[in-house]
View 1 (cartoon, rainbow, N blue to C red):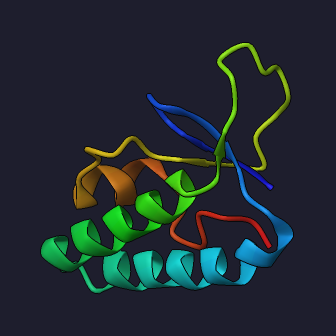
View 2 (cartoon, rainbow, N blue to C red; view 1 turned 30 degrees about the vertical axis):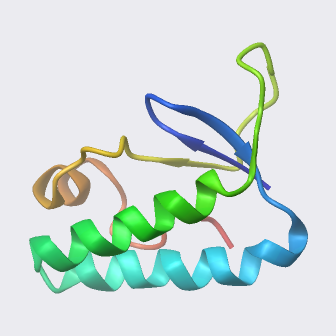
Length: 91
């Protein structure tokens, strides 16, 4: 799976990393739904750190992303206004 972090780049995650990716995604969504900005920031930072553990693709990679995450500095209000309220990472 290829995940783009807006303003950063694309990362390739291995198939065996996907269950943890989806767990972290669910935690971010739950934190956003709780309207707890501090918890959201912590969970989102954990998700970004995990995605960054994947293989960073070269800037000239032209393939599509399977998921696009907001930029690292997104606030809770921006995230809930601009992005879907369900999972950030598809299926």
